Length: 188
Image (cartoon, rainbow, N blue to C red; front, side, top):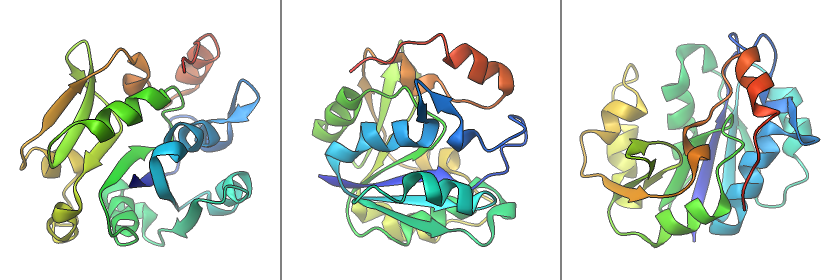
């Protein structure tokens, strides 16, 4: 097992509302992210920010979930990454909370692969979740605050793990993305 980090600290400005609590198949988007991840993680850190209370209310009943608020969420996603990483002490998955279609089998496949950093791919396109070995925690935390996960990822050897999961590429950024999501079918 690994640990998990789900990023849910942003403004959701392009979606014009808290996209984490929008529903897909009568379940909030962030709950889908947790449900897909939970069987492969001993603990899941949900990093909130702007919509802390709304998101906390939706996820507080999960036993493995710890909610941590990033007080500096206005500084961008990488500040939330660092807040989440400070809470882990083992290998971990990290994904934005607006990827509700990631299949459980993707977590299993990435977890069972080899390498200090692993990324699922679909048709040779990299997606989420990113798997990071615990030996990289110190290096990630010392990364400059104006960096991002992609910059950090590209400094290390990456193992691509090919999957049949198109959900690794499908995030919800806009109202149109959400409308399109409602017609998608989640596998697993």
